[in-house]
Amino acid sequence: WDSSGGKSNAYFAKTLDNRLVVKQMSRSEMHSFLQFGPSYFEYMSQALSTDVPSALCKILGVYQLTIKHVGANVEKDTRIDLMVMENVFYGRRVQKIYDLKGSLRSRYADERGRPNAVLLDENLLQQLVTEPLLVSPMGHGDLSAALKRDTEMLCKLNVMDYSLIVGVDEESKELVVGIIDYVRQYTWDKQLESWVKSYGILGGGKRVPTIITPKEYMKRFQNAMALYFSVVPSSDPRQVLQDGEHLL
Image (spheres, rainbow, N blue to C red):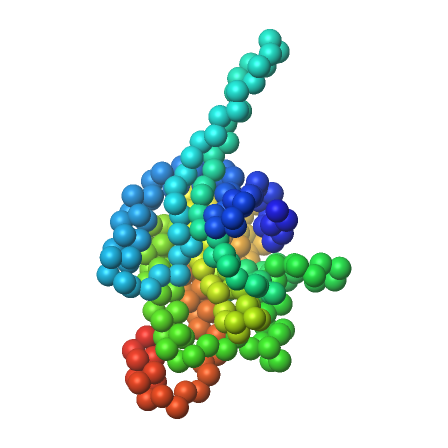
């Protein structure tokens, strides 16, 4: 499976029926998930039992795969940490995919010669004039409310660097969305990197850091997603009233 778009070079795979995605986890990602995993599953359980919309791509669990090596020259086995999650695009005919973070720093993907390239924030901004992401008033309200709740929860868990994956299903004329890559916490090394870049230490010159706090990331993410999606005018007054309660 050609899972283009990521920078971590992590191993990805899909089940034969395309329902599930398997992703290799780094040591830091596994450590983070073991810390906030119980809170995540409690949040998702409450959302499902109360029928509250959530845009989080559902994580089914994390596992450690041990590969036994046979031979006198092999000192130890190989262990790989894996995360199993839902395939957001299962059963869909998605023609275009966006990976959106709400940032413009290194967020452009060159499409030349890559018909299946995963597009980023700058690609979307260039296309919004002629190809806006249109949603109904009710859909926009539900999406806005879900993104607000989900990102506030992730902020409380000290999680950042997540993305909103958006698929354009041309056949059904629908957008398929899900928050992915929410297993990275704001650890001490990221705090140090942000502090060094902000104050221009080590000769780097004072500039906006690439690593920001979870609260700053949440606000930037929410504001950007509110701009990326446009509401289609509706003649149904019920949708207008319901939407007014949820818009960001």
